[in-house]
Length: 140
Image (cartoon, rainbow, N blue to C red; front, side):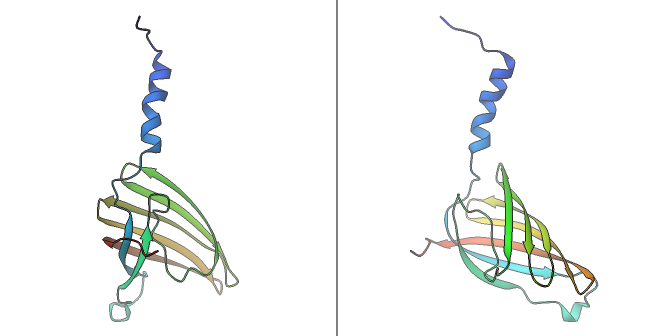
C-alpha cells in the first residue's frame, strides 16, 4: 500500500540532503594565492600576491591566513559548491570584521574576502582576491 505524503513533508525531506551536501571539493593540501586590494592605494605601491599552503577538508573548507593571531569568531554556510562566511576578530588595535566567499570546482577554487578594520580612528577596507589549487595530500 502506497501512502501519500503531505507537501510540507516532501519539501522537508527534499531539503535534507541538500543541507548536508558538501561542495564538489577534493580534500588535501591546497596552494592558495591571495592578492590584496586597498582602495586609494597607488598602483605602484600595490602588494604583490602572496602564496601559502593549507590543508583543506570538508570539515574545514575556509581558506585562512597563515598568520591569524587574533581572537576570531567565524560562521560559515555551504550552498552547493560555494562556501560563505563572516568573521569577527577582536584585537588590541581594534576590531576586524569581514565576509568571504569561495566557490570550489573539484581541485581548484576562486573567491574573495572583504575585511573592514578600524585602526587609529581610521576605517580601512581591504579586499583579498583568492584562488586555490589542490597540490596533493595533507601532511600528517
